[in-house]
Image (cartoon, rainbow, N blue to C red):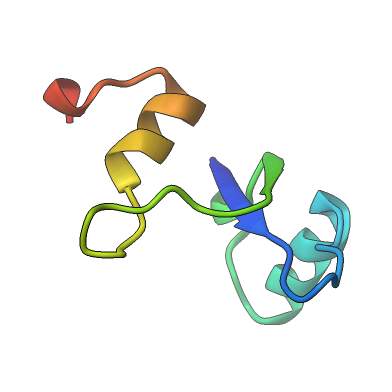
Length: 68
């Protein structure tokens, strides 16, 4: 599982190990942990200002919107 994250207000995101530790402590199953972390300056947005999930999906998984 891969997820994209963005740092806020100049605060760095933790590394994938730090995030995984936090998620395990919060009770998330190990199978659900992210395998990689992509840090972005900002998320692509639609014309309505919502996150452009199709663009993120295509960028990080190689899927096109038609395949989903």
